[in-house]
Length: 389
Image 1 (spheres, rainbow, N blue to C red):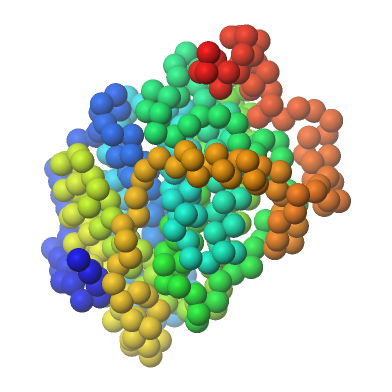
Image 2 (cartoon, rainbow, N blue to C red):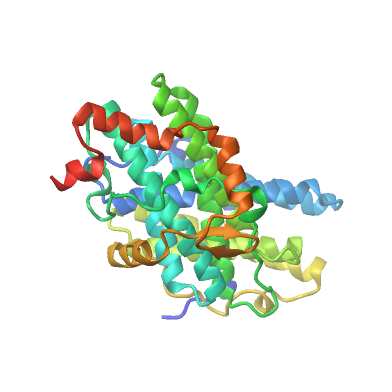
């Protein structure tokens, strides 16, 4: 059934404020929840965080105080939504367990987006990035078994394979080679806008998470691995944010953000098996419909255009968390040796790439290699070999 969020009635903004009791949500049970429920929570945390960041940046560039006040009203509710979503994660989970779930999000979200992306250049950007997140999952799995003596498969529940991808040591590139060509906002499929915004937001949240949790560990290899992969997440945010057309006006971007939130809450509501979590997705969708209406009115008044000119006339098929094993194995077989050069991709190392590798490694093995060496010294094999055995 078609669903056009521009035509739907949401909860009025003055009825969206929640009290402390309503915000005090019951977290999921990490040992018995659907792993993809946790993935949906992590994804929406990133989406809500991006919404808040964008609203703050827009307010800092807006001279119209009435608009700034309207942004502040909506943003406070968005902040409550972010707290509600993020607080669904259980305090029982360790930082490393949450990290592995973050990488499961990166793998299966990006793989699904790549499979569904209609634009071949954008699809290649997602295919390139997902093989790197795939390897990050493998590196953290080795660290998790070393520190907590548990298997990452218990977290991802074998829905996502844990095995080497493009080696993390080869992810360090000259920053100029992380910038891609952007889509053309006037001709691109509206679905492509949603994909770019979604993956950028998820990677940005991962980058923020690693920046903050990495120093919490005492073990040197853990601190070092978070530092290395955290730097690569910076590269990934650059990679994905550069896909967005910078010619989009503030008003157009505001509408895109709110429309994307409607799309994702609707998608997750449709597939969520946990009734308590599903009720939150449904509530937030009805809140976001009103946020979208407000953004649409601002666009009409200040941009002189109808929102229907820049977004799809109805929501696309639901974004789905599902296994992508065969797809990822095909990418591993055909694209593992790629790196970037300018806005394109090559299979051979080039001068800028080699200079970056020499500069950051300085003749040493990076943490992503040493974690495998230390795991092998402790268990006699790496995580993948041990799991297979």
